[in-house]
Length: 186
Image 1: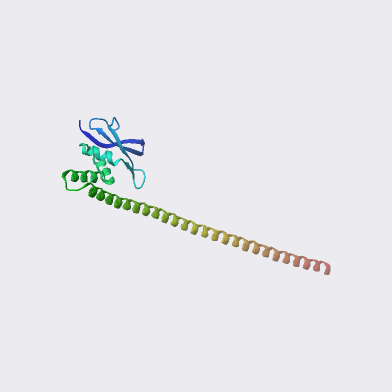
Image 2: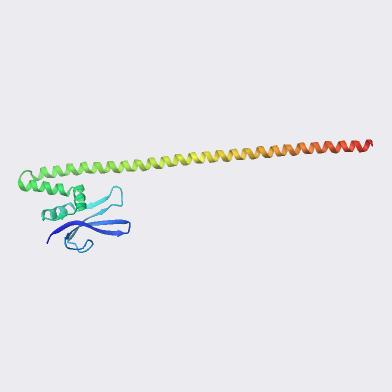
């Protein structure tokens, strides 16, 4: 019986969520498995991977063959490095302490890279929000200026109309007084 370390799909349509499992190579993709090793969620940025490192290394020591995607996940989390270092320990090239130190240094460097990516993404999101807020404030300022200009134009037009009406009333009063003067003279 050959064992594969592979992904088992879960989640709804368009939102995949995977279990990393050790399964018989003959079983279906989402079928029976021997052991659940971890989870992989590609919907987050960066992808969320929760892996039981010791269990994955145990299966690799027993001859399990990872699929391409599972190999990338195991490499990303350091399971393949630990498997490699354990081979060096068995051959006598390394001591357990040296191997643990190398793995810890690698994991720390990897965590630093992931944190830098998360910080970069957070900063990019903050920049996008700040640009959107600034653009919105500019649009609001233009809208308020246009409204104030329209109000000023309306006031000016109303005062011009009132002035025209007053002039018309004065002229009408003068004409009426002239007519009264003509009728009294005649």
